[in-house]
Amino acid sequence: MEHSGLGLAITGCGSATPAVSVDNTQLSQIVETSDDWIASRTGIRHRRLAPPDSSLAELAAEAAKGAISMAGITAMDVDLILLATSTPDDLFGTACRVQAEIGASRAVAFDLTAACSGFVFGMVTAAQYIRTGVYQNVLLIGADILSRWVDWTDRRTCVLFGDGAGAVVMQANEADRLLAFELRSDGMLNKCLNLSYNSQPKPLLEDVAIAQGTFNPITMNGQDVYRFAVKRVPEVIEKALFRANLTVEQVDWLLLHQANQRILDAVATRLHIPSHKVISNLAQHGNTSAASIPLALDEAVRHGQVKPGDMIAASGFGAGLTWGAALFQWGRFD
Image (cartoon, rainbow, N blue to C red; front, side, top):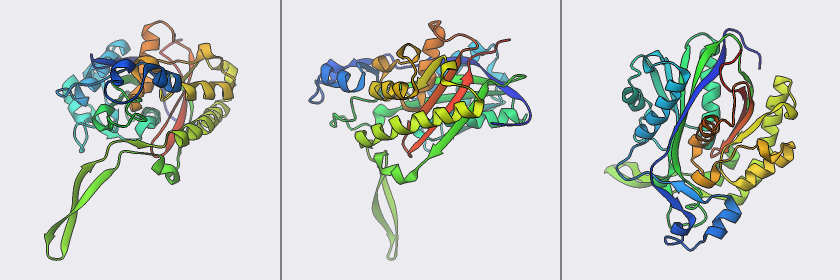
């Protein structure tokens, strides 16, 4: 991925999740399911759920503060805030509320929507601003509260999702630590995973009508999404490795969108990456959409698992359908 101008480093991370955790046995009181049924098919045992009085902006701001602190900068140093989300508090966008919440009054802020691929798409977007010299410090947040949009009577989907936020700080750096990326979209597969608008006609005048309504709960064809992910995700990771002139053996960590443990295992097997190199926090958090990659990264960094200089192959995949991979080295290091 050739470019001119500056390089970048990923220098800080943070995360936030709601306090309330619901396990599979508790879910069996809501829908006909069991801990064994959910865990054996998905790998999920717990998920965090945001209470009615919480906001996406609050979760995102908490994650952002952690990332800013680790990076050793202040909120006033942030030039750009990118909020990757599909569940904003406000359809006009929530990034500006996060900007106000953390006191980053110098920063430009806007939302970016690419569903579960949002964080990877956001990382690549942020890189363009830094590499061209426009901005020096970018705060990238992935955050979603999918519990707002789940059909809690549908055991095929309600067991999968959780709420959370994760963030990273990306800074201009002499050496470029984002080594390669590959982004893809296929709208022909759009119907596999949706959170669609359901409108009803509303007459205004004799010959004028508009549509008003709300959004339907999440619908998903799980088998189609599984087949798509296990085929396409290894391809984009291999493309990124090829662009960076690296081999899969040089990857220290495989960091996938935390959708289903079977997908994580299948992708690792196809890439010949051993299980001890696969980062997974799915059992505790479920699928947190755009938050899942930075949330898992933050936990791995703070637990001392991921160390400065480690090579990470990250990949997001989801609604759109969208998918992409980013190959980067963690941290600022010599």
